[in-house]
Every structure is written in structure tokens, then in C-alpha cells.
Length: 254
Ligand code: ZN
Ligand code: FE
Image (spheres, rainbow, N blue to C red):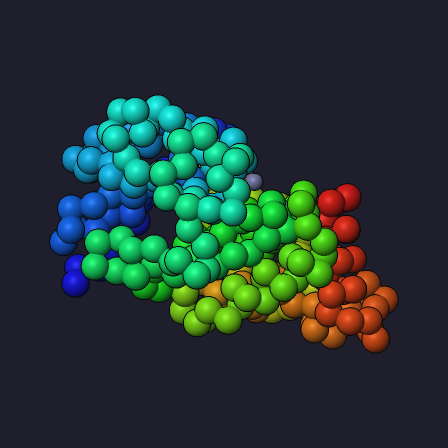
């Protein structure tokens, strides 16, 4: 099987859509198309025809291109079945029990609520599309869930192998990293990563994809057990959920 090809498509001010190409089956999906024009342009540059639109959640900056792209290519729209009422043009609703298939590949659907109540991740081969739940060095805001719900969703994602490549919904990495450094200034992996991130951004390069292994070492939202982070927060004996909740609260006000 030819490995899937992934193309980053910057959209709006800081969103990423992703083209996913299965060359064997001649299929091309786009994940979270914020808007149609940059996706259309990227498809044309590659000579690919869009067959599928995958949505991690219903927010407009992840679905804004659905209608135009569906109309133009007749692409099938796949998204969280539990949220069908908040999608226009959803063709195939998926969840953890249904999973999905892309060509010859099985795609694992992970239900990871809290940013929205029905947010999902798509996992195929060593690739995870995590939308606005897990960002590079960050996590999404809790619009429709509790800290416990988000901690449970992130813990679920952390069961993926360390080599899993993480493709998230936004280029928030640099500001996320600045926040992370306020909590764990002594985390050598975090300090080293920020050097790479700063260099990439100074050259206009994306910081995506990350890997699960790197996130576990540097993302404060995955590290409520870190003694340094706990010390910074003055929460040495709190539960992981309590530490996560305080970390999220501080990021909201950062
Ligand atoms: Zn969102
Ligand atoms: Fe978003």
C-alpha cells in the first residue's frame, strides 16, 4: 500500500485544512476545510480531485468550505453522527462504533468531547487529525464540556503510539509554547522544542505535524503529573483533573 500523502492547506488567519491522498484508490479527502478557495487551489496544484470532506467538529472555521466543495466536486461529507443537527450537508455520520473506511484503510474514529460535545478525531495509519481538541503544546477551549471531560478526551488520545503524527486545527504552537514555559521553565524538552518552533515561525514554516511522543514531553495539558508544573501551580497533592483544570483556566487568561 502506498503511504497516504498529506498536504497542509493554510486557511483563514491560523487554521489548517489537510488534503489526504490515497494514490492507490485515487481518493482525496480534505479535513476541516475552513474555506473553499485555498483547498481548491491546493487540489489543482496537485492535480487531485476531491472525493471526501472530513469534519472533526461543527465550528465554522472547520466546515466553512463544506458547501462550496461539496457542490463543486460532489464530495461526500463525513462527520460526527451525534451532531448531525448542527451540520448542513452531512452525508455520513460516524462515531467510535461505526469507524470509517478510506479506500482499503480502516479509519478509527475517536470520540473526544469537551471543545464541542461531539468532537471526534480521525486516526488512520500513524496519522491523527485532532481538530481543536489537542493542539501542538495546547488544547482546545472548553466550550461544551467540563475539565474532567477534556482530561478524559486527552487521556484517550494519549493511548495512541508515541510515533503518531498529530495534525491539529490551528497554528497556535508558538503562543501555546510561551504559556507552557511559564509552567515548566525547567523542562529541557520544552525549551528545545521552543527553539525549533521559534525558528520555524520566523521562516514562515508550519510547526505541524507534531508527534504524540513530543506532546507527552512538552504539552502542559498532557502533563498534570509533572512535579515542576504542580509546584508552579502550588498543587502538589491535587488530582490530575484538578491540575488540568487549573492549567486550562490559566491559559484562558494568558
Ligand atoms: Zn473549534
Ligand atoms: Fe477552530
